[in-house]
Image (cartoon, rainbow, N blue to C red):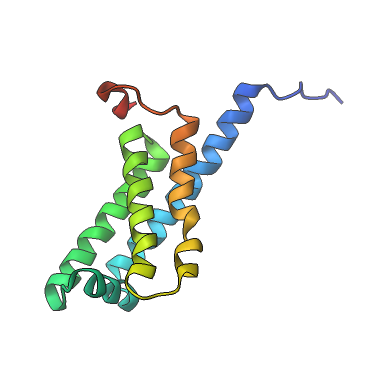
Length: 136
């Protein structure tokens, strides 16, 4: 039996990148589908943070769901830096919205992976140094 050569740094980084891409995909697909289903706790969060209720809140949540699903798909297909910045910021804002709206701080801490995973993928792909690099 022939042994595989020792994995080089490039293949190891590519494997980690794919693990992170899949994790971002799962996070945003799951949240997107729940938003499309108008999950009551998501509607309550919108109301608590903005005061928006009723049909307008439902339409906003539906739009958020579509954006989350698009984010999930792009994270797998083409995780460009601007997308990862968006996913990091959106994940952070939605996590921090929990204690701001009255939930325990632990609800924020529990959601660190929602923004930490796209941030790690962004870091792995190198932070952008100019506008052109936002789309690579």
